[in-house]
Amino acid sequence: MKFENKRAGGIKSSPSMAIAMAAKKLAAEGCDIIDLSLGEPDFEPPAHVADAACEAIRKGRVRYGVPAGMESLRAAIVSKFKTENRLDYAIDEVMVANGAKQILFDAFLATLETGDEVIIPTPCWVSYGDIVSLHGGEPVYVNCGPDAGFKITAERLEASITPKTRWLMLNSPSNPTGAIYSADEYRALAEVLALHPQILVLSDEIYEHILLKDVPFASFVSACPELRDRTLIVNGVSKAYAMTGWRVGYAAGPKTLIAALNKMQSQSVTSVSTVAQVAALAALTGDQAFVAKAAETFAGRAKIVSQRLAQIDKLDFTPPDGAFYAFIGVTKLLGRTTAEGAVIADDMALASHLLQQFGLSSVPGAAFGAPGFIRLSIAASDRELEGACDRLAAMVRSLAA
Ligand SMILES: Cc1ncc(COP(=O)(O)O)c(C=O)c1O
Image 1 (spheres, rainbow, N blue to C red):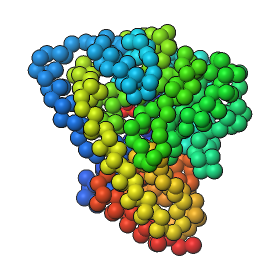
Image 2: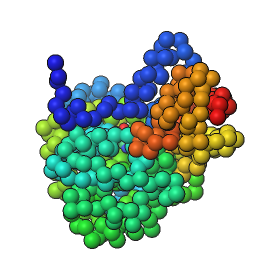
Image 3: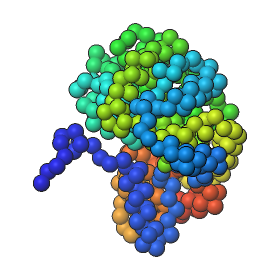
């Protein structure tokens, strides 16, 4: 029997999740797997996060919360925007959701009419397009390859806008490329957006703190304050505080947009788990040393991986400025033949071969709307990263022209 409707049938499960599950299955069968498919920090959150959550459970802070999020947590978010981004938001201009991912669901559910277009510069996070489609929108992918530093330019943005354009998605630092937009690059985009007042901007700033070089982070609204009232900033504690499983994201935007998102939450999840909110509050208000230390660790790992990848012939690789991924161009390997006699037709075949024969789990570029690449997470130990580079090098050597 067919259960799924057209919208559900038209999308796929998250590809990075699917690959991670395949890697876990092989590992459970006894294969020696290095899994660099999922984007999550490989260390524990600061101890005060777990302490606060345990105390909340013991004190019985386990009742329903309000859809927008606990007032104390929203106050902490307001203060985060003030101190870290020099942005003034009122308490009813921020909200809390089950991860940044749910904010995208809330936003598109609340705002998209069927057929509305959402401009998504690619390479992009695997989920953007399908979340748009699921809500009746039309993803409009704009290819922003290495020649453009993996970023959308004012010209490309202008060329992609139609009367149906409703949102522009931005993500800096980027998953998967690590590219970071400068304030000037944002302002160039804002000049175009000024001519199209119907377009809203979703600025996904979840990797704000994972800075790997001297390239500074710019929040979209700090760079373009004139667009504050049509921008939704998306952020969360998953990446900055290694709290992926706690599922707490947050957003800032104009009051009426935030109210619309809260309405979606009130009729779906009710609220984020109150225990998780207490944990997020501890993360945002506690000692912030963890955040800088984590970024330093990732920067060290990015260096190791960059040095090793530079030694492997036939890979195209630009070291990332932010986030924790290596996005590697593999087009020179396509069309080559494996030791088993199979031709590597595309990045999906390459990623599958790398997993099956060399025990290294990656995500093919096609999942990010960018065929011809693979993504490795660098959120792993130095030993695993060294091992991964060895396996990648061995795979490249094994392919015949
Ligand atoms: C660019 C980007 N946005 C959002 C998310 C989702 O984050 P969360 O764990 O807060 O749902 C991810 C997670 O991988 C991501 O890479």
